[in-house]
Image (cartoon, rainbow, N blue to C red):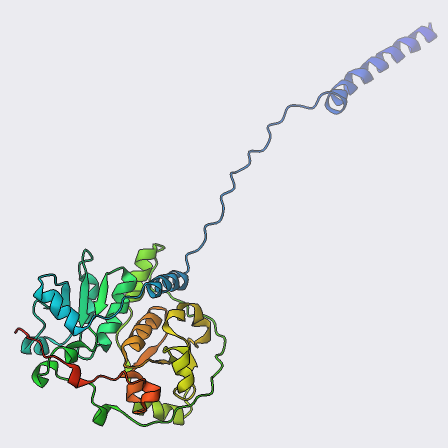
Length: 330
């Protein structure tokens, strides 16, 4: 009797243990419950930040690769006579424009250059060709079909009341020292441009163009700064051969066509003084460097203002005897 009771109790205990173990067996040894795989978010490549200096540098390089030549007074006069005149823009003062201007020319201030229409050829002129050349570089980078009148109004008129000012060796030409030993450039970081919040390349270039204005230094002042060992970079944008013939002391050699590729040679934290032969090419380089964030100045009248030595200035200085004296209108 007692044995049968213990047997019954043992059977009940075994059944209870089996019942209690069944969920554990299902969870541990049975099939795993179905799970939903995690959803992977699509990987979007990080957007490349637009760097303003890179955009402007590329635009400058593109302009220099197809830089327009100056137009002569004779060629412009012929175009007018043949009824094929481009849009002619005077950058001179309103008062001097009223004294006499090239037939058909309009007069606008430098600050309004970018308002000109882009659907045709433009010729820009000033007094001596230097500010006109500066404006040409800016408009060229912006995409205009533009040319500068070589030597400006000084090449058009023989009337001093009309041309107002022109290169005069008696007052504008010094006789300062030159050297023939090449100067090694340093290596510098590029300027940081922050002219706009836009990532649009056209707007970035336009914002850079809006920061510039013609700035000049005279040979006398530059010579004084050299004597004082001022912190600066002097850049010759003439040919390498002419740089070897003689250059301003301390100047480094960067032909204009190489300017965009040579920016690392120019210190962005000090003034930059650029010179060429007559001030025309130097003005273009100055405009482009200003767009790129440099504090750049053009040497007024270029190497012609530095030395009378034709072996160095190459005889390119303005010659009033070559001026034909064309008609003007008022």
